[in-house]
Length: 107
Image 1 (cartoon, rainbow, N blue to C red):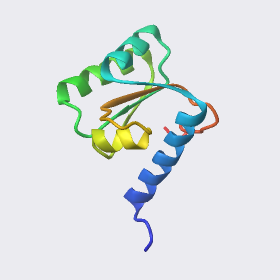
Image 2 (image 1 turned 60 degrees about the horizontal axis):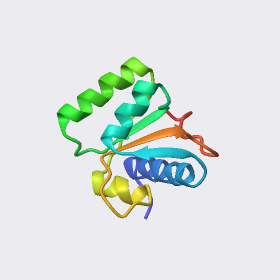
Image 3 (image 1 turned 60 degrees about the vertical axis):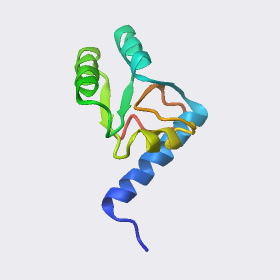
Image 4 (image 1 turned 90 degrees about the vertical axis):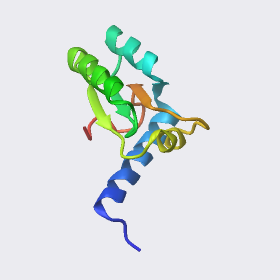
């Protein structure tokens, strides 16, 4: 079986995200995302698909002000938590340093 376009894109995001987890710096959570965007340290924000619309809008607004990129993760918060190597739900993941990964160039 070959991967379809959407699954292949999701696989590359997951692969790049695992590389960030190993070699870069990241923060998990809504409050941490807002804090790092206010400080100007955030480079990329990953938002799960089932994040509440008001939170999503607020994160996008702060990201626009701080000039960092936002990526809407195709999976829900359980899948984002699994992709980040956590055993709990993650609605927002903030990347401050990509490490060896090239995840920032792909957005």
